[in-house]
Length: 156
Image (tube, rainbow, N blue to C red; front, side, top):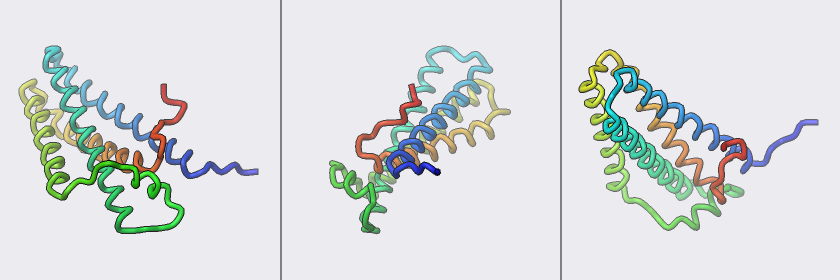
């Protein structure tokens, strides 16, 4: 007999995997800088910048989920009951500003890498930053599908 998970369980597991992936990308970016033994103050700045990328990309992902819901009103969609409770709706300008902020932050991190003489790591770093942004965006989208917004019980 095959056991099939309900939609919320599948989405909750996907969220867990996305959070794990986001954490992995953030760790890889930080470890790239650790190769040059950067000062703690720069490391803290880096961690703040990475958190800002994640937060802003999650917000963009949530907005995309809301926009998708308004463009397609299907039956039995989990997002329908969640979105109705969402207190925010972003304008196109706000989403554009969030995207621009992410680009500015990525540039700051790339400049920080150059300052730390990590020029040889820039291509890898750019790829990791893009992956962090994309997984954060997708995570924001998924967060709109699960009402209680909890992660898998596997995450500690």
